[in-house]
Image (tube, rainbow, N blue to C red; front, side, top):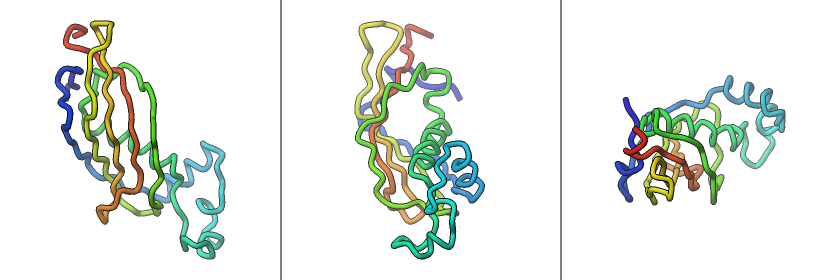
Length: 150
């Protein structure tokens, strides 16, 4: 699927990604790659004694998965130039191993910049679990090509 140019995004447009289940392998691999071996992620016995009662996925792992879910929507395939920033990101609820998460994006801004070959896309990103609860949310800004750049 070809991505959309900045002019094709409409303020208020909502997209929902396919789901993705967060696995034990995801958590173990992310602990190794990131160096974050907090026992809430890596020690089942410790986690059962915590207020949450079980191991949780790293918040930043879930945030990373959200970027992959955004890619699966396909609207930026070949048109995204660069990530510009993440703002107001909130970790609202834990994500557990074997939870299935989805990404709901809402276009807040889509504008051409002073350079005619690019624009800025700002989307509200909401990570939703299998129970319909928003577990993370925030804003992501992306530089996107214009029709002129194609």
